[in-house]
Image (tube, rainbow, N blue to C red; front, side, top):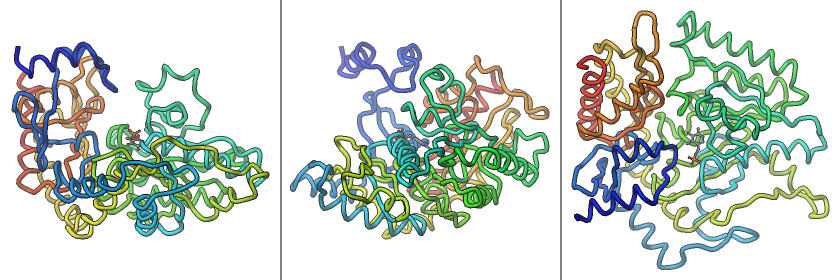
Length: 449
Ligand SMILES: *Cc1c(COP(=O)(O)O)cnc(C)c1O
């Protein structure tokens, strides 16, 4: 039996993959062996474009020399020591950098290892902030319908994607859910009307309940896992104003949108929004190692700063928090952002992506194309005029991405929305080819059946 076949058998026998129906995996197994630039290679030697940045992480491509080198250099000193009650060099240097690049007002960095953890920390921090200030009533959160903040229990409690979250309902704490401005599915299809309606709904919720609300949490500018849904201009800053008006904290979950993904360093920068707490992860290490952070204001930090006897300490921490290898590669990642002008290039290439994606409108079943920077979703519908979705059990999105895999590109759908989220380093030529494959796959599955 070939080495490849042995590995496939082992993977079928021993693994349980995240967010995966293993019955599907058994039918279409895949084992990645190596990667270079914007492509990855499987154990049979097939190459694929990494059309979703290995689930929204990768920034500069795979096997980027500078990033590899940063890890090797750190490895010669030490791989890991704890951040409980002490620190290390890269974690300290990185904290300074993060405070510099995040929106004004964010001054303190609390590390963790995944986006979901960063969100858990944000929620506990917001909750305890009010407690530490002696405000006992503010214990609840407001979240957007269709929002996604990770898979741990707290993160799911402020999440709102029924297909993932409903089953866990008995385990969750209650939060207020308000409508997200999903323009394509709004009866008016008008961004201003949709925005105003949603802001009114949030205002009404805050008006009635602000005394019991600790914070509003949302994904700024674009909801990721909810289906790559872009906000109308002015919504994010509208939410910020309402938070200030009603004295509730604003938590911006930039786990997906951070680090240049949307054409700004952070999505909040599009509207000059200054959240009280920001969560970051995915792109922070260029897609290399698990590092996440929750960054907050001096005001929130100060509410925890006291004599130990007052019990205002933030009692939270994970074993690998502030890992040196992770922080070293994150520092190198940030250097590359400067050296290679990543943000400016993303903005330029986004215009190219927009133009290329437009050609997908020729297809009969492409309902909506949404894009902000290098984050895009193509929503497939059974009928364009009425926007009627496909029956969900047909799994059209899944079929399309399997077809894309055959044609040499990886992605993962969100229902019937096809995700296009290539590494920020992709050249126009590579982007063009990826979009061609996507178009071909959509055509073959939806029209050529
Ligand atoms: C991916 C994601 C998370 C969860 O991050 P993990 O590292 O997968 O735990 C949280 N929030 C948003 C907006 C995300 O896109």
